[in-house]
Length: 375
Image (tube, rainbow, N blue to C red; front, side, top):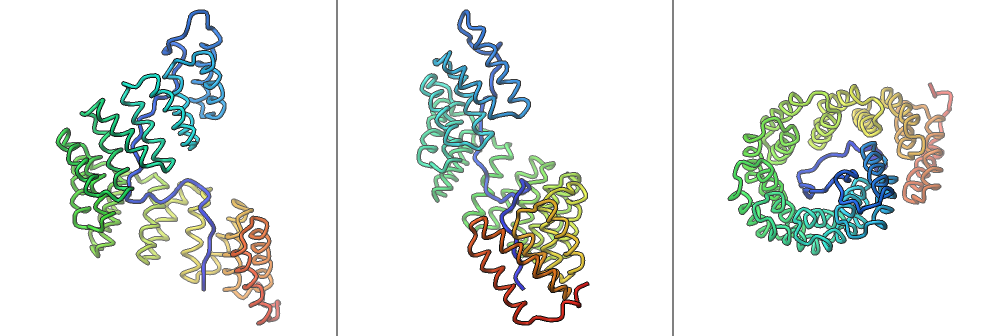
């Protein structure tokens, strides 16, 4: 039996072993921190209102006000830096890079602007330009470890593992007690397929920061992949003990256990996540998937019925609901679920999904049974 769920809908995404590019981004400045030209009460008002909106999480409107402010004070690098920050919060990395490029042009000796430009470019997929920006940041601030971390990640994305390791070693020469450096080395070792090196690096990072639950998860993943099941389980237990109320952590634990076909333990982790974040679509979907694998169709039906309320436009929900109903011989209801899945797939332009649902419907029709079997 094939189990399908469409793309994740919420932000409890599984954190991998690769590092995201470290960011230095200046928060939007308030009027009192800006070099406000004389007689520019409007500029001061725009900056203050923009900062207030940013603090409230309304990044789009804050961006609009900051862009207005930039027209009144086009030589203020910090305003463009603020725009870059706001664009990053909205994941508009190309626009963020444009803003930081303006900030760099106005203040070319500011290493933080070069770093933020590198971060934006890297997130936008322009690793070549990102590398140049990080290298410029390092020229201006050669003792700043965060610049080495950013450059190392970009080099590893370009498969320049030797160069990335060299960069991290230079960072260690500056600050050998920074756990982020060892975390980065661990991620690099994972990319290179060196589990022993990754374990050593992650353990060093944990020794320096024993309260980081995500490091424990990374270590557990490598332990599992290298066959050290007991050590992996211990790392997972430590991670959950460090942050027992973090739904995302329990979800990630479940994903890791599921990847190892440890279905009962995965279900337990997902249920812990659900107790903390009962409205999470991803968590409920993960529970449903495990229940289907275990052929616990009745509970799977309950789970997917709930998901139809949380994600009524997600065709994968109805497809998996159809599988669960079919598993209980509730064939009429299964047909309706597969039909809804087909229609949603079609309306969303997913021809492959629509075909898969139609095949299920045809299979049911070809082996049609008395629908009185439906419960």
